[in-house]
Length: 627
Image (tube, rainbow, N blue to C red; front, top):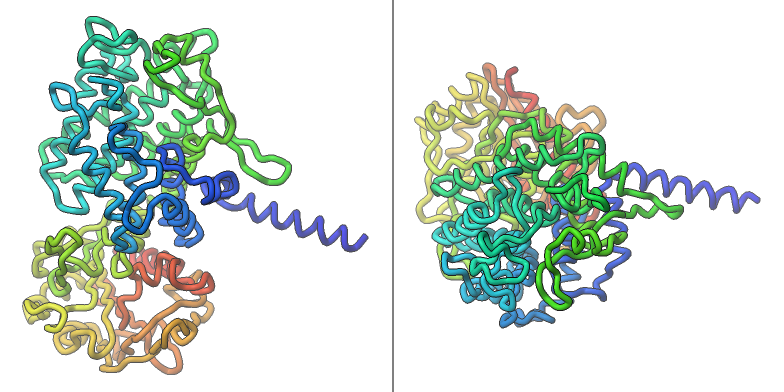
């Protein structure tokens, strides 16, 4: 009897723990169970699901999600970059979507095979058949046809590639695809877009005058909306087409809001005919609109009022489509299996066609868009804490360069968008999650260019062996920075240990605040003996309110005098110093510390809480900004 009781108690605790997880992670558990690596196929459907996994990894630093994405893609990408099941000559945009995952894996690991795989897809876009005015055909067998689906399948990858490899001219071509569809496929009555457009006006489903398909299909508009917000992440703001894309998104968002069912908060399979007999709220389209509206509002592409529209939609999704079975598994109902035009058997785009397609449970693209929508909703939880604030990372004193895989010289080391071990992409996401905008200062700090910043981070200033064109912190920089702190700025200095950092000039700055780095190096870790880098945080620490154990390797300690004091001491060494100075504050640690190698979860065991510490750190910094 006792055994049965304890077994039931264990099951109850496990179910309760699972229920307390965010919906994104609960649905991810379902996906990993349904589609192990052995089921891998090169298709946009699992690709959408894998993008969801990537977004959870970036929000949790839980390596199981990264390992799942990498394992799935490794089952498809050979060491020479060959992609299993991929045929370029099909010229289908659907096959391009997974290139985003290959690029992400390359940006994180720098393994050449991922670059070679993505390069094949970039070459496909170079050779992709086009309409007479430059629009990509959806597939080679669908001559002169642009489908809304294709914008999601191709353009975010195209933008990721152009951004990563500095091919700025490509952004004009990317914008062209959206502009063409907006010009030709938008319904003037609803503001929504028809599923397909035949530039030749010859296809059987196409209106002979407009070339348009007969209906506005929910998921098609969802693909288009998701594509817009994802492309805008990488689209240069100084490109004139940036404003055009923002206008298209804002017009579309207003139309999406009008089409939202006022009772359920959901969106219909046929958006232009909500009262049509047999029409129904559809899960994947609803998830896509929630994702696009929530992300658009969070990033500032859309007014913040759309957050409430997204919340209403998300609650509707949870109420209508989510079920939890007896085993605690989360399932998604209500996704239409497919929607297309032409082909064999022929799909005529009629009401009857769209409303006859099978509606299924746990469809990968439905689950993928639900996970992505859930992550976006979860990111809104703390957005108000640092709303309207800006963190500026220095790239003047730390300005190392290297050649990338294409031979181009690039700035690297502690950059917000850098996903390798040396980057700050995870720290940047933490700032963004608390509403703080990230920016980079490539020039010397002056009163003028520090003015927009609330937080300024100086990390590991260069020494000549790292950068022959080393810039040192001089008297005028010290005055500008200290005056800025006195007026209410928050300075964070993340240095390095002796032999790997600049001390003399940096210490002149820190002495203004009663602190200086010692020319030492401790927590030297041999190989994978990571416990040698462990530091335990005592209860009640003013900065790290939730992190209890952190990893720091090769650190310089600090000496403090008033007004500075130790905010973390270990074995009688000052590890972290802080000081109030005027209306502002200063934080200093002898380790770059919050870079991806320590925070993204791939290297360290879960008992090291560096990602948690990064969240504590960011919240503390925000708290030092004068009200």
